[in-house]
Length: 500
Image 1 (cartoon, rainbow, N blue to C red):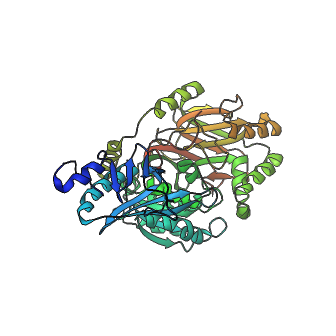
Image 2 (cartoon, rainbow, N blue to C red; image 1 turned 180 degrees about the vertical axis):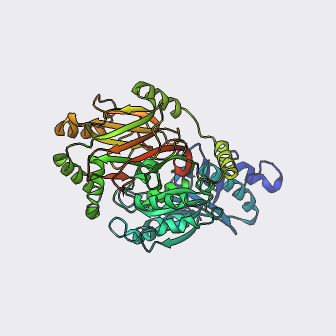
Image 3 (spheres, helix red, strand yellow; image 1 turned 90 degrees about the vertical axis):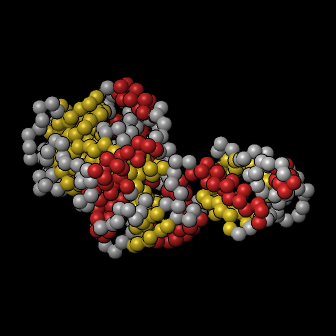
C-alpha cells in the first residue's frame, strides 16, 4: 500500500498501519521506502524468492538497499505506477541509469505523489530540477570524439533527469562565441560545453560581446563535459576531469555558484574574459607550444614543461600589482573563514536582480594598458622572473593546484611568481610539491592576493597564455570582477580542491 494519510478511518486502516511517518512509504504490501538525510532506504520484508522483486532488486528476507539521494535524478507517478530513477556509479564506465518500479492502486496515487515531491526536494536540495541546457559540442576537441562521448555518456543522464536539451555542434573556431552572443538568456539555465576548456573560453567571450553581458552571465551558468585535453573547469567544479557521465550527473545536481572573471586588456583595446589563469614564462610555453600534441592528452603539458625548463632563461618583465595582501597566514585565515560559510540561495537571487538592473559588462575600474600605473600599486621584482602566473581558480589541470588559496567569488586574484635564480632542478622540485599540497608554503613561491596587475615583457618571442589560449606577446593588464559569472558546483559555495 502507499499513502501519506495518517487517519484511522476504516477506509485507510491499512494505509495508516503501513506508514511509519511522512517520510516512509509502503508499497507492494511489504516494501518500505524511507527518506533519510542523505539516502533512500529500500527495505523488503518479503520471504526469499528466486528472481527479482517488483523494485528490480534481488528478493530476500528483510533485504535493505540504500541509494544516495545525490544519485537519484527523477521520480514520478504515472497512472498507477511509481518510478524512481537513479544512477549507479561504476569503477571505469561512469554511471548506469537504473529504475525502481512499483505498482499502485488508484487510491494510493495521491499519497505517493506527495511522497515523491518530498523525495525530489531532498534529492535536489538547492539544485534546480529539470534544467534547460544549451549543449555545445566541439567535434574536434581533444581526441575528436566529443560527439560520441556526449551521446553515449551524457545524453542518457540528462534524459533520465528530464532536462530540456538543445544540442548544437560547433562548425568552426569561434562559432561558440557567435552562438552565445545571440543566445536568449531567458531560454536556458546553463550553457554546457562538451569539449575542453577552449570551448568554455569561446563561450565566455560570447558573453562578453553581449550588450547585456552582466545579466546574461548571472542568469545562465556555464559547465563543461570533459572532452578535451585538460578540462580544468570540470576538475575544479566536480573533482573529475575525465568521466563524462559523472560530470553529466554533477551538472544535473549542480548548484548555481558565482565565479569571478578577469578582464585581460592590451594596447589595441581588446578585452578578453579569463575564467582560469594567465601565465607567461615556462608554464605558458609548456601550454601553448604543445598545442599540436593534443592527442597526448594531459601528458603534453608535462612534456612541454620539461622541454621549456631545459631551454628557458627566464621571463624578465616589469610587474606592478594592486596588492591586497602578501601574507600567507592571512590568506589561510581568509580561506578558513570563507569555507565556514553556508550556501545562501537568497544571495544568488539578489545577484541576478542587481545584474538585470545594470546589465552591461562592468567598465574597467583601472583603465587600460595605455594609462599610467596607479600610485597605490606595488612594483614587484621582475628583472629575474622565472615563472609568472595569476589565477582565480585553484587547479589548471590534474595535479596542478597552483592556486590553493583561491576562492571562486572572493573578488581577488592570486598572483604567483618564482624567481629565475631558483634554478632548473629546484623548479622541478617545486612542481613536484604541487600534488602534495606543499607548494604554497615554499619560500621560493611568492604569492599575493590582488585586485589587478600590469605585466610588460622585457624580452622577445615569449608566450602569454590566458586559459590555455595565446595572446599577442606584449604588455597586458588584468583586473578582477567579483561574482560576474555563474558556474555549477556540488556545494554552491566552494570548488573541489584542498585549501592552503
